[in-house]
Length: 187
Image 1 (cartoon, rainbow, N blue to C red):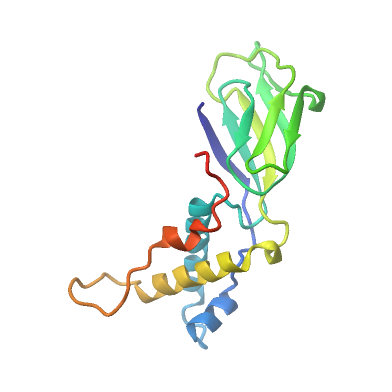
Image 2: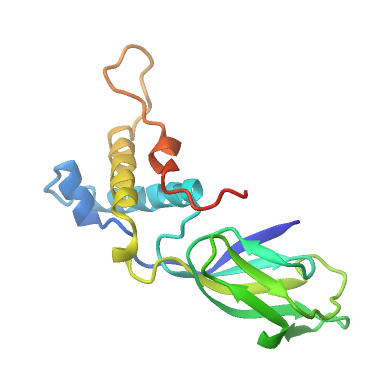
């Protein structure tokens, strides 16, 4: 089973704002606001990679080489907007919604194809377009937000090259921070 997922429309809002992070870090100046915004994005990407939870709402496209029943290894999925494919003439077509069933309540979401047309012999012959992520940032679990703030604080504190030797600082295992929030155990 080969697949790829690409971002069609990225998120525009993150679960931790720059002002929230500044409060968490005890920063009152604006000198590092741009850097803090970049740190938030990096920490959110790390959180998503560890949990398989899409934090901010976005449009994604999953590419498959052919039709087969599939799970979408992301959560939450709010809508399958369309499924397209390349027919035997290598022309792109849209699959009728009556040709498949979706289960967006399961984690991970599932698609069962009832009838499938033949596809052109090519890579990425089938595309599943879907909306994923929390509709509002307020729906993101508080624990994930706190873990993101902790990762951001670590990134902010360690923005220079590390000096090897004795330190009084404990190393944070990011995977453990996010482990309780992991939604996908299949991949």
